[in-house]
Amino acid sequence: MKKFLIVGLGNIGDKYTNTRHNIGFKIVDEVAEEHNVTFETEKLGDVATFRFKGRTFVLLKPSTFMNLSGKSVKYWMDKEKISIENILIVTDDVNIDFGTIRLKAKGSAGGHNGLKDIQEKLNTQQYARFRFGVGANYPKGRQVDFVLGEWSKEETSQLIERLPTSAKVITSFGTAGLNNTMNTFNGK
Image (cartoon, rainbow, N blue to C red; front, side, top):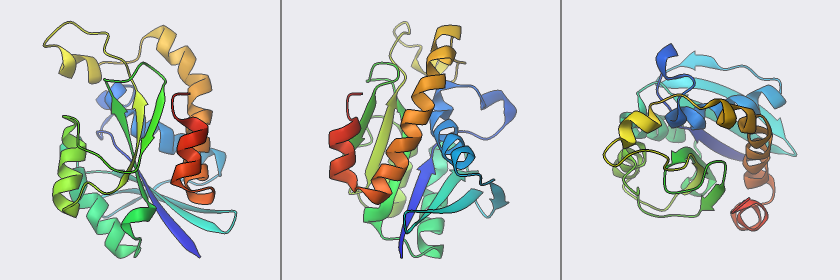
């Protein structure tokens, strides 16, 4: 049976729950809700597992804070014996318009500290990532405040439709493969 590790990046703690930087957590929460599974607190993260169309999906929300996510990813990849081509990292991206989806097979960290740490711990850039656009609607030099800021009312109302679409990206990655998923969802 094929097994996939889906890692939603975010920061732990109530003060981060509704921030743009936590969209990775929000998306894997949506997937868990749609598949009626709950997260259990385990070593280095909260984990939920479900089966769908003959595949096993391990959802992970690292408890290491965003900038140290690599330790959690490496631990769960090894523990669950999941190969790197079956890993998908879900993260925010300020270089993409709000709500836009972009999947890539590999790439640089693009200034994202969570991705930098994952690349360092896995010793490669060759892993799939699902970037959810949060936009760049912030004054110069205020990026940190923006990504750690809460969603606007307009963004929150749009997330209601964007989260289910994002959940479909996750299951498509496991069932249809990365290339088909990119063709179906990129830019949507």
